[in-house]
Amino acid sequence: MASPHSGRLRWHSAAELLAVVRAEPGITRAAAAAHLGIGSGGASELISRMRTVRLIDETPAPAQGRGRPTTVLGGHDEGPLVLAADLRAADWRLALAGIDGRPDVVARQEYSGDLDDALARLAAAIGGVHRRAANRLTAVSVSVAGTVSDARLVQFTSRGRRDVDLSVLTAKIPRRAQVSFLVGNDATLAGLAEARTGAARAATTALYLMVAKGVGGALVVHGEPVSGAHGAAGEYGHIPFGDPAQLCPCGARGCWDLTVDGRALAHHLGADEPADPVEYVHELATQRNAKTRRAFRKVATALGRGTGALVNLHDPEVVTLGGVAALLRARAPEDFDAAYRDALMAFRKDAPPPVRDAQHGEDGPLHGAAIRALDHVTTPDGLAAWAARQYS
Image 1 (tube, rainbow, N blue to C red):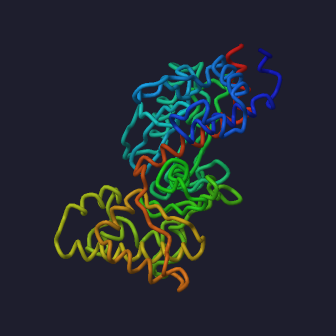
Image 2: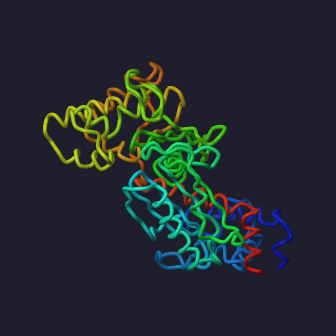
């Protein structure tokens, strides 16, 4: 076998095979070879080479009657690992994922005080995982419930912070380890997850909307989010679909954010703004009194109207709702549907894009962060770097 230092070209087919294995869990060698358009001999050589560097392995498929047992392709038990972190307004979670991209939560913590202290604790948890899996950890991918531009957290409205340097999260990882660091908006990453492995998997163009504290989202085309010039696209909550007299914490007026989350429910109920708008929605959803029903109807109407407007803008095949958006719709489905259809242009009304609940639910950002990290480390260059580790 040639040295892994011979360059990226020899890992191009390996990257293509890993993409197939990730997209089609449980795929057989023959089916994977057909996807790639290569013969059985070429597939055997490629899989053997990838097994040698601990990228792929074959395991027996579940028995299905008589006949020769079939094997399926999957990630190697000693293969690359990535860390996915989800930094939200009131807590953070840290998960580990292998080639299959399924995040396994290894640490979590709530925080109510200083953001810098929360970042320090998350950095310590990341460092702890690196110490235990230094020879396998290849990337750290962070999802943040804030506006990300050029890989920086430029606005974290829920904490009143701007221009936060998140590179502190890798402070406990030695530079010589060469672990990649990626940052993305939570809604953008959740939209990526829905398009790749969730409710919008079969769609070429999908719109994802996520309600937490405000609403964000992503337009995903051919499995890639449209991120804009600096990575800050998808801030749908700051389109002026709301009351122009209302000043949003982001600095703009009339933001849709203020009409579609727990803060909007509190406003309609004459209550104080909730400290945690997501938890507030869950709490109110258990109440069945007339006043609460009216509040949900108003918020569902605002959500449906804005969703229809965005369909006019983006022309998606399907819309998926994440965060508490699905719950808001479920509490007043007729109001949501009526507002959604009323907002559509006439030619769309007969066959509007379906609106589906997100498959990954509130774990969407973690799944998306893991997918983004694996996209990064399973490129030809990333695989060449991994192979070089096995020979160092």
